[in-house]
Length: 323
Image (cartoon, rainbow, N blue to C red; front, side, top):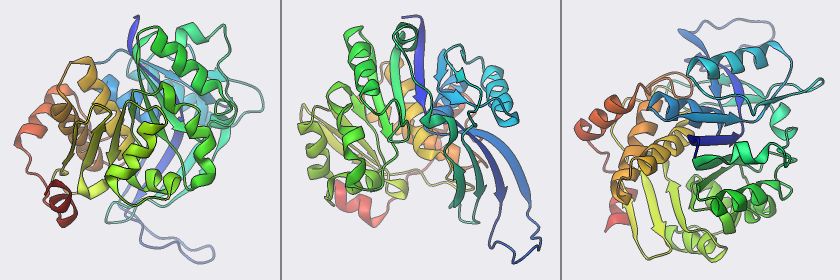
């Protein structure tokens, strides 16, 4: 394999302000304390966070021939990420968000979908895209053209070539299930938020929700539970819930995507399942301490040290799941 990690899919330009408590009426102005830019999205965040922690990475997606696209490519290149498979076409617009981050870290956003729905990996480019030890499909459900069977075909080919496949999604209801279902038989680790998993299945329990996806071909489900931690459920019967870390939250933008990156790092380094989930949670927790996706992530050593020294959050929901 040429690279450690391919992160393909949702890559967006974010402008974030903090703290935002209200949108001013009319043409008014509200003063805030901080403003920043970030490459975000399920693939963009994952690629940068993984690169910060030492993986050789490739970002795959679409941007427009606009200022936001210029900045996204420049920022990816600053982290040594291979952008040779990024697509840019006349008439496309870079996926972009205005993120109004609340004092508690919640992040209501105004989003323009843009080129995430436009790009397509043809047969000429496919061998390059899947040439990685871990191939991540980030934002299944938002990749309009790729969701029509092409993600599934690339995942099948990646597995056949010996890659580990991981997938994260953008889903709000059972209507999004067809796009997601096509890739599941070729997914080693399926890593949605629990809210998305419940929305797709209509179920409200961890074990049954995971079993639903495993019945459709997924090898292992790793659900992010927000402040309640993460749930791991493998088809071999291994299952556990781990609590989240106790951290001061600045911004939750990209936490699930940072989790995906941390899990990929753990896979590449050969960590056991529980350590892998703990490391992924540490990556997500550090993400939450900065403003903007992956801002709080520094490098592998800092993430490992954080994992070893930071207390866990023992919420009632997590304690009930562990019991």
